[in-house]
Length: 109
Length: 227
Figure (cartoon, rainbow over the protein chains, first blue to last red):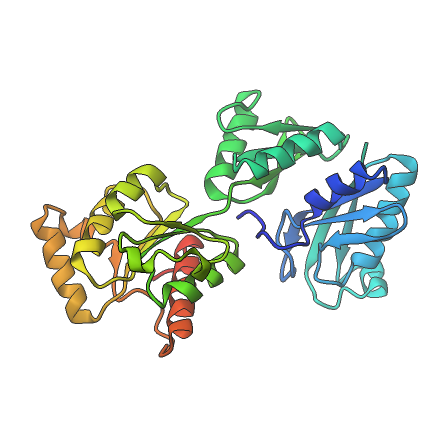
């Protein structure tokens, strides 16, 4: 289902930030296994200064995703990230909510 | 992502046009696809499935990973009867992400301030519904208990592909309603689509609780979880 009309709409925010001349990247959940907290299609928009709107996990992996999004803004390369409880990095970033998610990150522009 | 794609996607969402954003995950190249406009049979089939199921998904096309992100317009709830329960129902539906229309032909109820964020139509339900053209992403709930107002809405809804039809009223009221619909020529299988009394049994007493039980039932129906 379409995301609800709440004010954390990542795509609207992305357009507004670009309109202000900011550099942004979008992160999108493309695959989930197990008890992932946010469904496929959930989005997070990140600005070059680290500001963000939306969510891809309900808080567990946002920090790591924001870091990769800022890297994507810098080098323009799209990337796919994967986080799971069996993944050392996930523990590091605190994916204590369990499950596995794959997140696609790409710069707008 | 191309900024022009982002603008076009947001335009489609604002205009309530369904669209799929298809992104090749290996290169990051993307394209917007409207219903029936997919390039190639393999992609067309996957896109049609994504639209129909309302589920975004990663698929493999020619050995390459393609992410199909579905942007369907919000589902609609059409409420017949601008009665007291309609107020919390409209508010809850809106919070859940539904586009809400309230229909009531009675002038006394036509106060838009009671329904912030909803469209209030001062019209007979069958006329209003003919205009609104309820589809498979629409639920219709009648609240008036008045056959003059509820029945035309139910007859119209039964002839439409809506995903849920509910009618407020006691079991006795509902039994009489079913009889009237059968007399109007609807077969048993069709009238069984009208859920009455509408709402999941959560022991609701207040208007807000009844609205919550109705909205829970609508969500369950849309998610395919209604027994």
